[in-house]
Length: 280
Ligand code: GUN
View (cartoon, rainbow, N blue to C red):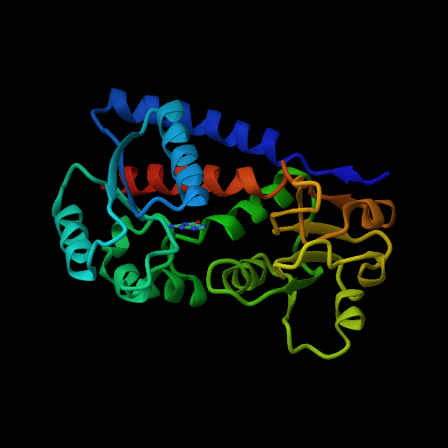
């Protein structure tokens, strides 16, 4: 059976490390504060935002909550971001996505001061990652690098295939793997002979957004498989983009859903907040 990469345990370890770091920063008079902005009351967003605030409380980061009505205008949201950018006591700004249709998400992301961009979504943060300069990195791909490192999976020199090219996961994932000296292929919905491409992978990162699409035909014997997807199956149980039962017997290591990549996203957000607070 493969090694099961335990994202819950690894994220708990990272949060404990951060808790200690925050304690030491407090002793030196540094207080860390994250502003969490939610527009509307999408139930999934409310769960994510609640988990982020809970993680802040555990680590010792103050969180400020801004729960704005669904009818909030872009101007009102941009005004709030401007105010938070100007506040010396706020280190990080998180605007939960998606935003209601009347608000231009790109304009909101661009409005956040890159020094407070703990999501790593600002074009300046993405550009810095692209050319190897310091900056915040999108939390899910950064979490996957930690999962691999802390599970003893070597990345340098490996064939890595990322399925998915989103701005939040696929693209930054490819850039991070490249930074780790992997040979990287990005596959997507228009890729021809997808199985042929994915079967080259020593490390296969799956962010396709289709429940249990990836079966063993897509996986080379002994590959490491990382599943970014989260869906509910016909029995309302969580499942990923990978058909876990089918794939697990042929790979050397795999992340489960739930308990794989998911918990890492929040751990890395907390890491970015601590970095934002330490950099002052
Ligand atoms: N919505 C889904 N994932 C994320 C995330 O990582 N950050 C923000 N801001 N919104 C999200």
